[in-house]
Image 1 (cartoon, rainbow, N blue to C red):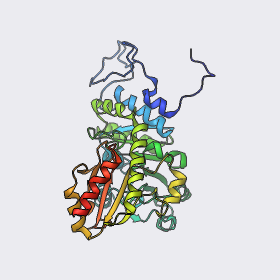
Image 2 (cartoon, rainbow, N blue to C red):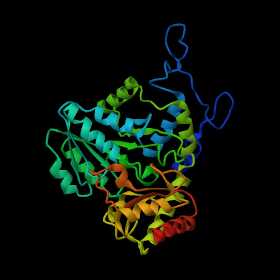
Image 3 (cartoon, one colour):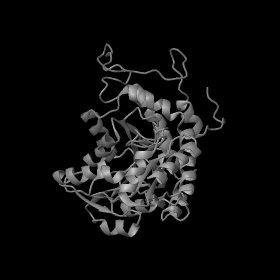
Length: 385
C-alpha cells in the first residue's frame, strides 16, 4: 500500500520512469509493446480487458498518452495521432458548418495552407492575424460566430510570441475555445492549459520524440467536454490513432525529454548570442534575446529557457542565405526540427511566394552537438558564402 504522506515525484522523475510502470508479468521496468489488432471476448460476449479492436485504442498508446497528459496537466487526458497534421486537423474537423476561426499569420505553413484551402469547403471562415498583437486578435473576433482561436507560440519560423493568457481571455469572452500549437516550446517550457488554453497540440515528430524516427501528433485537453468527445470520436472513427511501435519509440524518448530540451535550449541561446555579433548576419530571431519583441511575454510564460529554435537573416539576401546552407558540413540541410541532430533550412524556398518568411532567412533547429562545433561550422559557411 502506498504511503499517503510520501512526497510527490517531480514531472521529470515521473517522465523518466514512464509514470513508474512495471510490467505485471515479467516485472520489467519498460512497458511491453502491444501490437495485437483484435482481442478475445469474454464468455458473456463482453470485453473486461477494456480492449476490443486496435483502431480506437491500444495499450502502448495509452502508456505514452498517460505521460503526455501528466506533462501537460491535462484534465481530459491526451490523444496520440498518426501525425501532427492529423492531430491539428481533428480540432478543426470538430467544428460545425458556419463557424469562424481566427489563426496566426505566422504559423506552420502546412497547416496554414490546409486551413486556407479546406476550411472554405466546409463553410468555415478563417481569418489570419498577427497574434503577437492582442488588439489584432480582438478585432478579428466575430461575436456569436467565432468558435475557435488557434495560436502557435513560438510561431514558426519567425518565433513570434503570443500571450497565451491574454488570447484565452479574448477567446473565452467571445464564447470561443483557445487551442495552442506548442510544438516549439514543449511542455517543459510552456504548459498552455495552465494559462487558460482549452487544447494544446504538438507535432510529436519534433522535440517530444527528438530522434527523427517517428511521425506523430498529440492533443491534450483541459476538460472532457462535448467538443473533446467529438475529437475522440473523429480519431477513433477515422482511424487516425498512432501505431503501437511509434508509440513505443515515443515513450522511450519522453523519458529523456527534460535532458534533451535543457541541452538544446541552452545551445540555441548561446548560438543566438554569438550570432548577434556576426558580421554576415543582419538579424537574429530568438525570443530569449532581451531585445526580441516577444521577450517579455516569453519570459513570463516560458520556464527554464526559450526553446531550441532560432532563425538568422543573412547579409546579401536569398542568394547568400542559400549559399550558406549549401556550405555547412555539421548542420544538416533538412526539413523538420527538434531532433538531436542540428538542422538548417531556407524556409522561403519551402513555403513559396505566400510565405511571410523573409527570403534571406535560415531556420535553425539546434541539436545536442557541441555549441563550439555548430558555431564554427556555420561561421565558416557564412564567411565563404
